[in-house]
Length: 107
Image (cartoon, rainbow, N blue to C red; front, side, top):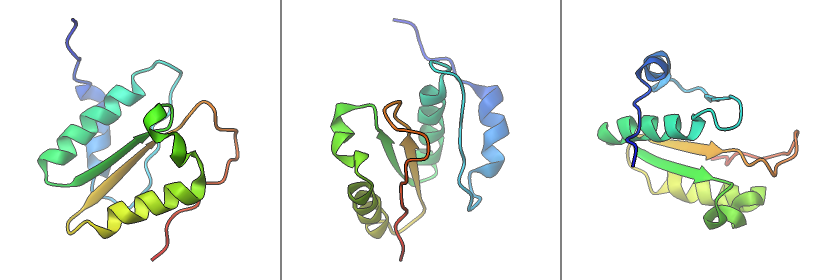
């Protein structure tokens, strides 16, 4: 089994944005290690005691969250149970159409 390569060059460019209240989008061609990069970011943030929610919409485990109302409720439950900082990674599915509306939870 081949070990995972730490993408230090990419991580170094992303790190300054970790604690900014911005939505970060990582884009790239299919099979261009976006998911691996997100997992590495997740690992770094978890070391800083941040709670991390990672949802991969291409996984059958999250099929019920393709409905935006269910997704809203799921993310809201995660945020409500959090006493510190939290981060959510939502990994786009190739099944989604461009322009699909996904609402965000409001307080």
